[in-house]
Length: 187
Image 1 (cartoon, rainbow, N blue to C red):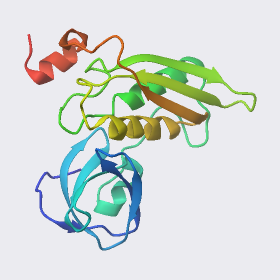
Image 2: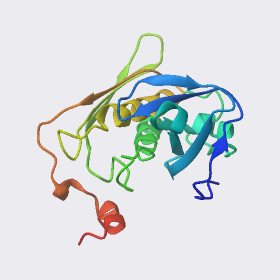
Image 3: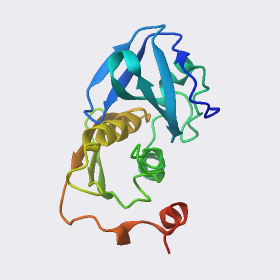
């Protein structure tokens, strides 16, 4: 597990990362020096001095920084999720997504407004999520949405996913779950 040392390390293999907050992807070559600044929800925020910024590394690539990828317990290898299992898997995946600036997942922050599972003719599913941010000017929107989409796409039986940012109704602190309030120290 991540030790929280903030010591520079070199990635051991090529790995795809998502720029924070821009949301575009790029591939870091093996040997790139990084500093892990945060590890929440099975993804890692990396400071990459040679690229001049922060990047998010998905849990599927955790081995590139010497970490063990968490095991997904929602389904066995190759089994498609359906019905309540898929619904639970999606919500569990969304609960592993964090704003890099707030130590509460996007579900408990109250950022998810809607989630729809749309069956496709090939037996897979399209997932549509409507989410908001704590502030419209938040530069993390594209990065958080890309992280949520990526984690949903890892679920067996999902072939399409769209995470849309919406602004109505406006987010307020009242939307934070009791669990999120506890983490943030809010009564």
